[in-house]
Image 1 (cartoon, rainbow, N blue to C red):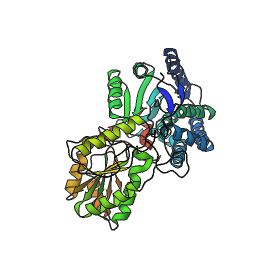
Image 2 (image 1 turned 90 degrees about the vertical axis):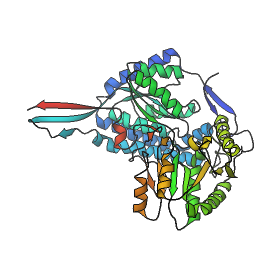
Image 3 (image 1 turned 45 degrees about the horizontal axis):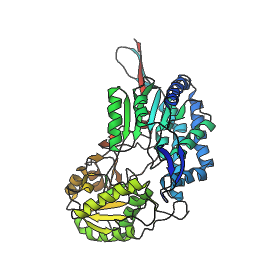
Image 4 (image 1 turned 90 degrees about the horizontal axis):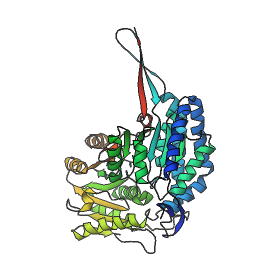
Length: 457
């Protein structure tokens, strides 16, 4: 049975299947990607920019069809799917516009006369391994900066998003990207290992689980290949003070339940000052409990299924483990009706270290709330997680919030807002949340050869 198939998570129906790549197809892909690199690396920067700009335009032209594909494949409500297409367009437009400047030579001041120049050059053919939760966006933040830089790409997408993967490959072809510069591969795990180890491959970027990241990093390390890893998160939402608990709780619920809670950088742990805790839990529970699930293909649906029955089963096991060990379930906690992968939006309190929910990422519509005595307690609890992707600090006193934010062991912190994304801001974490950065000027530096050219005085 093929691993690459479209299974509608709202109904459980298998809609289409695709064969895995053969050994010959993988060899051809490696050869073609390497060959394309030899010409793409020397192509005029203006030509690369024009291709990326056209890619973004095509995403808009095909917006309705692209949104429908991911609604069918991973359950994202249509309105959110269209929003994802808009973000993708902004990423390609950003690198088309700003990329040439990021490639400019840097002149160094040196002693002893002469000149020293740092040139930003590409590395070669790269492998991208991308997840299902944001099928277009995750690819864009890897592909856009690296194609602008002059690298070429082999893209192994999630097995549950084959139609999205093929749609993206077609967009690049229609935008005028040279043959071989972007190739979709329906690769197996063994084939992925072979690609990373092949001398024609110069690096790998993975967005996915901690387990997958560890496996890829081990292979990359053994083969001395650069890797960028964007892994899980258990972001803390620290509420220090607020003049309107109900409004803050409403925003918190919205931030937690977007994409059915399947976002690595969504707020998952809510750390609330003790004086606000009871009111916040009550208001959050009311907001979360009022959310109604629907068919993701209906335009008014705001909350859809999880990506698969397997994902729903794992999340329900984590919830059950917490409740069985003494956690308080305020709302939700059960599977939705019907054959789809629906899980009721859930609020838990009373989480303790022996529960899986204390250390594991809850990748779905579950909010966990903790009371904290003061700023120090909030920082200690926030930093107790093995993850370090993002976080948020909410306070009417911005300087106070900055003081707390500076103490968080994370790659990103938002003040009075949610962990979001935009093309010009770097994205990435520390600890077990990964290695490296994407987006902004930093996204173009990860797989670049910062070549020194020294003219002796």
